[in-house]
Image (spheres, rainbow, N blue to C red):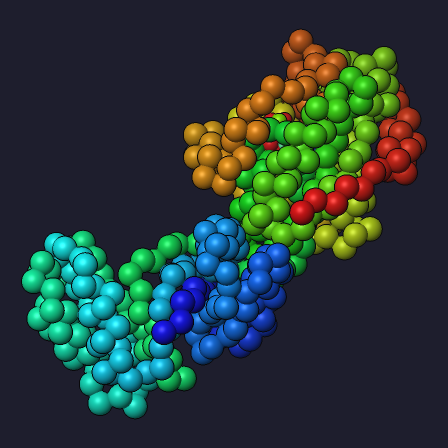
Length: 386
Ligand code: ATP
Ligand code: MG
């Protein structure tokens, strides 16, 4: 008997002809994530297994697998050669100290066996009962379920627990995108959600140093580090909006500060997307959440983006739904640390809630928008995370 971790993948099954590609990307992602451990990742029909790892690494490996998109579920499992007597013997051994109710659930991909899955479950359940008098069968709501997974290749896996992964699709199977990553609650969640749909994400962060501190920047790096457990290594482009904000502040109607600043952000985001071949811009916007997220604001701001789709995975989310996910993925505590965002610098008393494009462009013409953007673009810093 060998101790292994049995991995099942989810939506990959739906992918018909592409299945080979999805499976290949997923196994590469798993290997990359587990490379710090001395473990072997192998593919068997319909499953992956992690084997030959150090016992002391087991918990860390399980926690790592829990964050890899494309993994549906996994189990710590015993692996043996398919032989009904051996399966029976090990099942009895594994259940010998249990109490309460149980059932045996068999999945038989190996159709060469004489008994079908129901018969195997019944036979093994009977043996377990004969040896352990503290157990009773309950097929509806058992306290313990012993799973027996008999694969095509003459290996059988026996396990009790199923741990659910994030599901979704392997990162890298849906192209790549650029997330506008602030230090807030929403954008890290948006990045995670798109990684879960298979998007390889890079991030862009806008700051107004020295009006915003280094702490704001460290916070973003910390958030990127947390989500990189799901997305894999992540590049952050750090962009200064200081000059743009100073110019808007000096020359434009102050109620347009956020609208013009955001037009600057999206202009730079699209340039970065083109330069680094990112197929989409991702944001954490949610309709109506704040003044800058009315449909009119979103329209006037995204008008600067000419031919890159803008994906807003949280557009229909309530804040509390986003917070639930932020807590689940571990970004919430970092996101709520106090910090200044560039959007909070030079904050107007009454930002325009429903801007119109004509008037916004008139305000924009009061500054050297294109040149300021060029300079900001030229001074971008690149930070690698993960
Ligand atoms: P978040 O919680 O993500 O900060 P928010 O509720 O504060 O969002 P806004 O400030 O209107 O809302 O920002 C909307 C979106 O614009 C963010 O989710 C993010 O994608 C992007 N964004 C805002 N500020 C920045 C920034 N400083 N750098 C990068 N992206 C930003
Ligand atoms: Mg914010």
